Amino acid sequence: MNTNGTPENVRKELAALLPRLRRFARNLTRNPHDADDVVQMALERGLANLDQWRRDARLDSWMFKIVRNVWIDELRSRGRWGKILTGPEAGENVGHSPLDRDSDLLSVQAAMARLPEDQRTAVSLVLVEGLSYKEAAEVLDVPIGTLTSRLARGREALQAMLAPGDAG
Image (cartoon, rainbow, N blue to C red; front, side, top):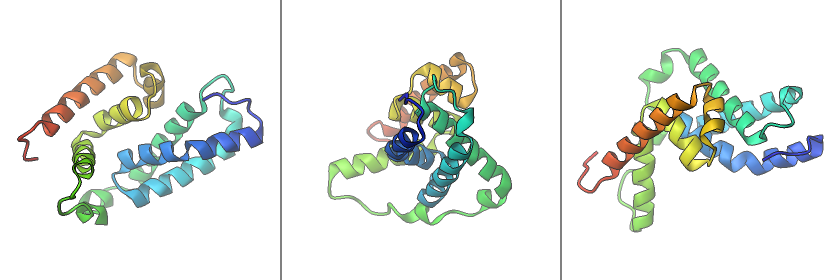
């Protein structure tokens, strides 16, 4: 997702990225309201610092990194408060969906939420958002080998959680 860098084109590219940024933020935060706030802050930060974006780099990778950094900043500012309380989304998927597809989607979302953050982020960037290993490693500021390990552990954990007969 390279763009020619004109302000108008960058704004168009950012608008096109919104669904992916929101999906990534929801995987990070596990809360739709927090995710929307994080994406908004990331967009503000990205637009304010657009001069720092390398025109030869992918805009989506740069923005995923900003989203991740905004979330880390948010967690630090919250301190322990966020670890004590459970958000309202904890009960939003209670009950059974009449459609298998909805049930499967909820199972995958629940399994993703149960992954450790490092694995969830790796899975989200590579398997959900389609970034290459190299791009995802750059977003996370880790070596490719570390990303590969996190991704492998995340895949194994998801397969185990989603295997028939797993009660959760």
